[in-house]
Image (tube, rainbow, N blue to C red; front, side):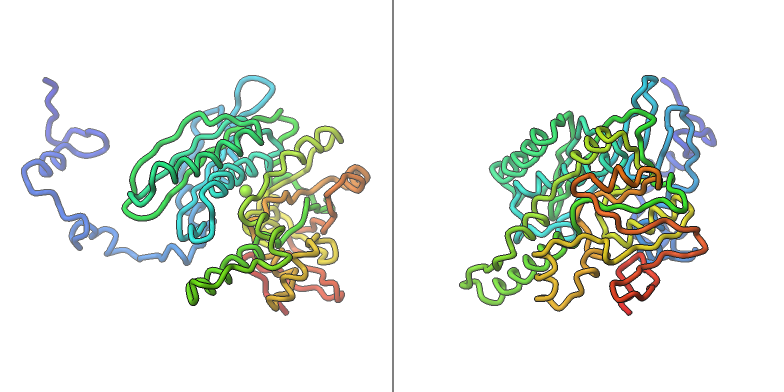
Length: 382
Ligand SMILES: [Mg+2]
């Protein structure tokens, strides 16, 4: 038998430590002694860094070791060399009940569909085509087999619609709530990949579809939930504008059609990102990665008529919904000015600003003609 000697390294631990664990009772993981090294140093609240600051902090010491890793953390998807003319794109996302979705008003089939779509959207954001997904879930015992079949019916529908294959995943239990982790894999020829970092000052900023509708759909669902909780006898009233807005929230689509349209127009965006957190946040990501500033034209930001009217009913400025709402899964991209004529005549694409030098900052040119600084988290409204 292979004996391990005290002082020898084994799996990164000194053997004495392992030996101590065997002879002494296991330490209480929550005792002050066990966590001494955490307790004695400064305690930084996770919230203070924000999601992206936290990712930067946790991954800053990971040096790339493989030549095949062409791009790691920090874009919509990682880029992996295949040795062939096409590169592999990999993106992963996690959805947590109570944080990303509320089962009080989210049908499980829609949730399954959306879980796949939000990941496929990240492959589109690299100008790639999605091909495979893995789906992992953690479930509490309150879910029946039938409920999970409903969830997987939504996943199947998305797989059929986007022509992707479900190739694996893990299923485990959770104490409370539903957790969904999806990984999407796609491909793109090297010279067609759009990273966040490729924009240049003077590039034209464009957006697909329209923004803000998904956020307003969520506000309607939240309103109806509150009314129902106060008076369960009342039937939900989604209003006449509800249909489009609810569909944008509950059944979003990824813009694979745009990836096809770019190919057909022989256009490669200089930089691209999908709109999951609101336009302002995505503009900041493009600016940070490309080392630039930007000016967003309020008059160029497309907002659906139903979203305009619903925003006014809720007493919110429609542009605030577009800038800070999120979950639209449209594509924000930049093009070289020489490609202006190509985007000008492509359907469902709107010119909404221009990239500037970093020293110019990130700004919004309002319809009223004023220039406001944009804030990444929410918008500093006047
Ligand atoms: Mg993204």
